Image: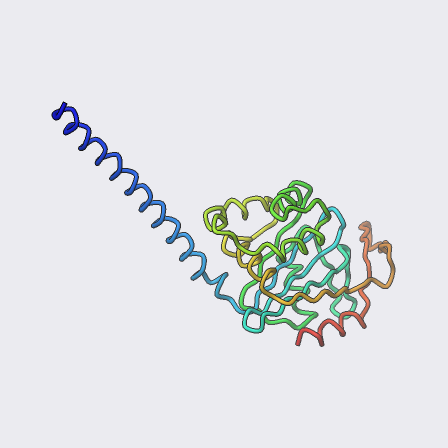
Length: 226
């Protein structure tokens, strides 16, 4: 009897040791992931712009966050917007250039900027994350109450991969968005079009649909963001 007990003790010790080492490994990996994200340039950036093009509504949403002052702004702009003072269109198929165009006519400086297209599948993912069945802006408002959960640090890159098209969002940038939505005072604005429906412009053999942006709205938003 005594010999059997003595044989069981080393086995239990080894099992316990393996479990403890596994737990330590998980803790080290989690800490490394969290530290990497929290110290990334995306997360440390003070003035950050996000441009989302919502295909389901044909609207752009510029989200601007200033971490130091805990301020957040969401500006809605028509998807076919055209600002006549700069003679530049907003192009859903080139979000990088469109983001620069918007930042230029609003005279915005930033430390980091990101863009992404939101299609039906991406919206489905955001709905699941927010626990809300609504449209893009309703889901964004629901995310303001969520913040970052502990498991999000391990899923950050997976989250970023859900934005499959026309996106430069990294995992750290997406968690920064969740953090700022939760910890900023959000103000909403809209830059409207002079007309509700696009105007068709013919140049040679090409046709363009444009919604000319209200200059007063552009000026008002520009002054508010200074």
